[in-house]
Image (cartoon, rainbow, N blue to C red):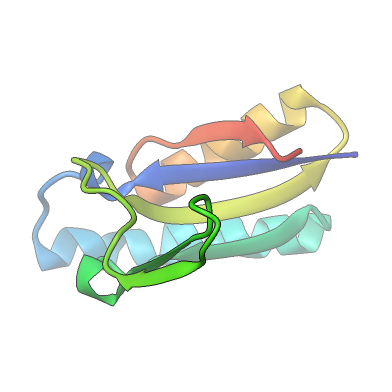
Length: 113
């Protein structure tokens, strides 16, 4: 069994009105329920969008420094992540497609090492 991270950057979501976002709640939560029922879900969750609530920890200088805000300024921020444990890449691709369909925006997938 291999773990895969299925994730998206907030900027991939696009600009939509509140009604559109409400229309995505049921399909996206249905996929999470399906993953739970199939026994493949490890974790799923969205991240707080306000980067003012982010902080970072960096000990690469030899001294640990914890600072408010993101570690670096970037044009994209991680918006959410789902971790699954499945027997093969084809199954991971199937679940990634289901998550993308449920959410209504693209997803990227990587093996968790």
